[in-house]
Length: 121
Length: 111
Image 1 (cartoon, rainbow over the protein chains, first blue to last red):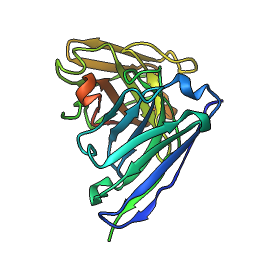
Image 2 (spheres, each protein chain N blue to C red):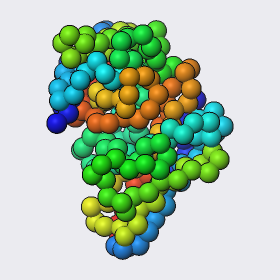
Image 3 (spheres, rainbow over the protein chains, first blue to last red):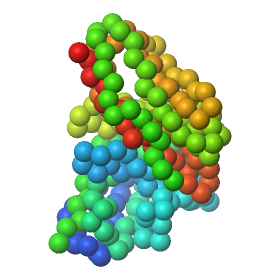
Image 4 (cartoon, one colour):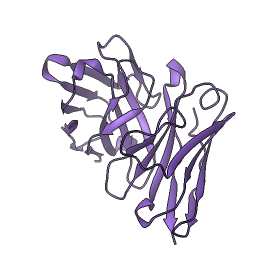
């Protein structure tokens, strides 16, 4: 069974940094691209960032470009999201999501349970 | 890149069929056969229901079907059941600049 477990969320002040982690199991991690998708409370889904199987292709939403950095460690079956210069509007539940293939195009399945990031002074 | 447009809510009685539309542009829905649909129950993570516009993952009921015409994709739920009450989101690949755009979401209510 595929399992994705996010961690690292919490309360942080505007302008500060936070690093999210996602531990993966139940599948061959380096055979798949991975993504982060977020959802503000009561709002819709927003794709944040994605990384191909070998980190050769990386993409970011315009809303986080230049502030967030996605990375992965295939030896540790782990995905990361380094979030710098956090803003109030970054407050959301962040989901770690497995991609459908090695590359950045496809669909998302399955999703982790999410880790909550709250940006507030 | 704007979100794909979905109706805010759709309702139906048990056993009926409902259809949720998802309208994009020629840069996303109209350009790629990569529309997917997700079901989200309150407090739960989204679940993949349809991929590549009309394909169902293993384990998803055949009451769920998808289609696409031009810049608009659709999700149809037939034989509506109480457990289908949830939020539904469409998503489309939108090229290697924008990558992905989600729909605005539709709340399905079973009357």
